[in-house]
Length: 581
Image 1 (cartoon, helix red, strand yellow):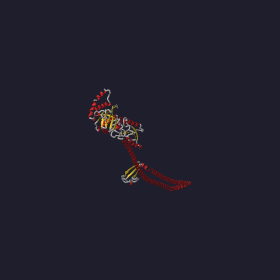
Image 2 (spheres, one colour):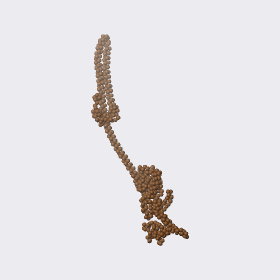
Image 3 (tube, helix red, strand yellow):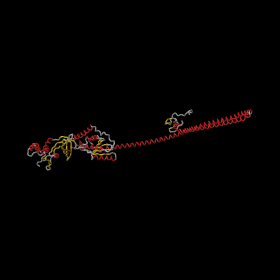
Image 4 (cartoon, one colour):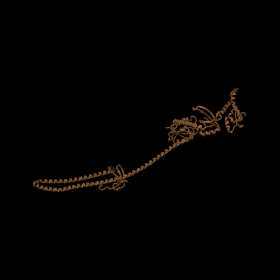
């Protein structure tokens, strides 16, 4: 008990002296410095009498060490040697110094935060490493401020600018006590890394390559890259399953780590192998990269040049849903489209699919509407055409009937007139023949008696003369007279028969001409009549107009010609004069 050096500490300082190696004496209710432990780090809590003694010991350490080397027992206790080192370090670094380092490992215990720090050159060679501690009295405030400013936990892979005081303890060795962190340095380092990747890709003209690919018109096949047990993968896969169930879109999954050394290269390899092994006839519509959220530290592994370039050179659009709403990673910047979470990615895919479904439905409805309208219009046109054809057919029938009746009436009148004229002509010819025959018969009859009288007279004279001359000439004269008489009768009868035959032939020829004319007229029809240069005039109701009396001024008429119909309005209607008729 007498070898113990007790400290005067407050309750708030207990953790600090404990970290320096002090021990608690429950009986005395005080903290003390064990024997052999250097007292220099505890000067602020030493009693007044012990401070000077300790200082003397410290100032004479080197002298004592030199003298003791000459004694038979060579060397000094390790605790004394290290105590001297601790004194020298405490004198050299009485206050913290701002230094930069990379966190290699981090852990916590009882509110304290323990770190392993290192420094490497550009080639990755280790230049320095050290242990550091943030005591609980500073840890809560420093870490909360750091996370608020950077959004990241103080964890492996983070580069930091810290204010640390070097401390050397004989029983714990060298460490750094951290009492300050500058978050702006970490933010600058993270952003600088992303900026370097961004500028390099822009110089290589790759930065906008994937973003400028045409957006998929629809999603039918998608390749998904994610950690195998990612928190957001379950929600994504559940919604994706609905699309697969209905045959809308097929999803193929490949898995990769998203944190730690080599994670970026593993993601790029998973993407490449997924495309190479794609079973479809063509590439997928898009690649989806998702994970279930994470801190800035977790996302920092995705700020990798090779991974970003792989996304830029991907032949299909890449969609990201890393699960961090505030900060973008390098692959978010170069992807075709960035979503905050995996759920929003699948929602975006469903939105596009639903839009296509709505468009297809609207298109089908438009086609059906147009088809219905076309059918309705066609039916209406067919009905109107049918009605028009029926009306026109009726009009044509009425017109044809009227025209036929008119033509037949005209033909009948013409035939009747022709027959009448033929009959008249025949009668006249027959009458003339009969009259002529009668006249000839009458003339013959008149001539016969006269001739007979003359003959008789001549005969008497001849007879007288014959009687006078020769009695034998009388029979000859009588015979000649009889022959002349017979010849006269024969001539008269022949003339009458010939006249009757000629009359009969004339009547037959007239009848044949009438019948031929009738057949010709009946065989012509309206169209042949029109083609011969005639026209048919009808009223608006389709009735044939054959007289001027049927037409008034201003009456609308239709003139049927050989090749069409001319509509007109009658003007200056006047009847034909008697001479013209």
